[in-house]
Length: 293
Image 1: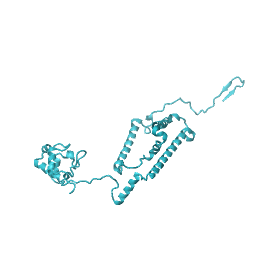
Image 2: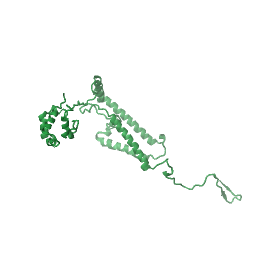
Image 3: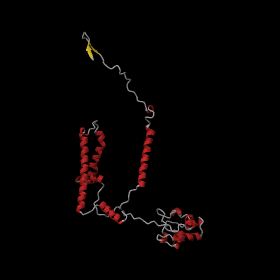
Image 4: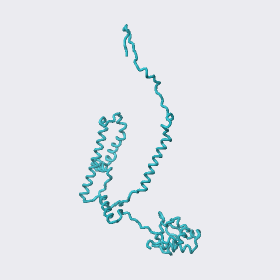
């Protein structure tokens, strides 16, 4: 507030304020987290370690779900199927966009690199171009218009792609392959047949598992390659059902001379403590391993 003296010679300035407000000391540096025990913590390593632990728990949960409930196997892809290929629904707009005249054919470079490069470049530069503080969409006409235009283009292209696909299928009298698979699975389910085309091999049992030759099989170190359950693995063939293709003499020949990648195992068996009679007994027992008993 200002007023003049009685003689009107000079102006006197009087400051009016609240005496309850104390004079400040300027900018005060806030204390660090140690001033708030129990209410704050260091980002590294305390907070970051907690975040990692939560991430590990979530990851283990996902792994448990994928192991306990594996994805069901459906019909394998048929490369000779005469169907019109089409991507998943979330790529339909790109599928339709690449069918446009100026995005395919002679203009494929423009369509794949030019237009998409401008679109994604604008998306990356959006935080640097739209620096206003206004957050209401109707107060941001440029950004809002581009967003609604992109959304409308995606919806239009997706709907057009699906409509044209159904039209092409109707003109060629084709049934979508996924529908064919579902119909085939329903027919098989009604007949009590498997609903997948995956070939399931019948389990071949070990013949005379209690025979003393089983102990000779383990003593001869056959288990190191063919495993205790005789199922083999990788490039090593299974011995279950080996009697279907090899008799006793053929098995003895393989033990003494080897076959394919298998080296001769006669000396190894003798070194393991087997006698000539033990090896003969082992070969006879392996010849009994037939799938049909």
